[in-house]
Image (cartoon, rainbow, N blue to C red; front, side, top):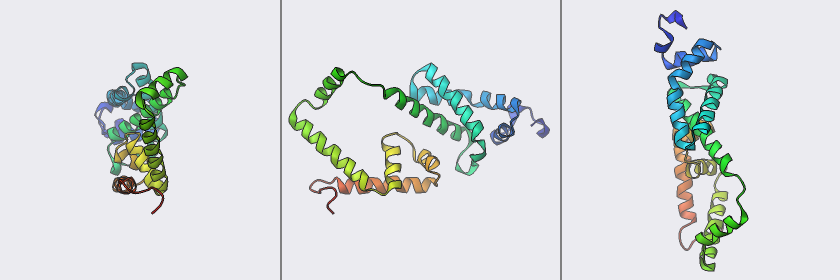
Length: 194
């Protein structure tokens, strides 16, 4: 990499990534140094825990090294690509941490606080069932895009990268799915019957 006549710190991001792909250990160190603050910043913002954020950052660089060949500069810069990897890994980490079992007594108290009357319980159950039914009726790619954006908080760009489609296609899938849900869940309309 020194052949370009520049010290490693001054190489363009794409050149560092190419050196990382080639397995150059000096370039790998320079790559991590350049992006470690950004990657750690994304991780800590999502997970809120220093140790977990460090784990996410390490996994981000490992994944970047393993998948450097799939990076496409037309779809975003190297920092944007790394940020998306870190964000996705951090969300996965948070989901994994929150899937720990809850004490049944705590769960009952929580449910009672949220749905403290039979009427509220019935309304919540009905709305939840309608929403699940409406999402199930969407074409698979629209449902996936909607869930990634709406539940996991992914941007259209992140949905596009995850699905391997252009950003415009991801935006269209999300927008179309939202429109279909609005129609399906409109007052007076029964889901699945029209």
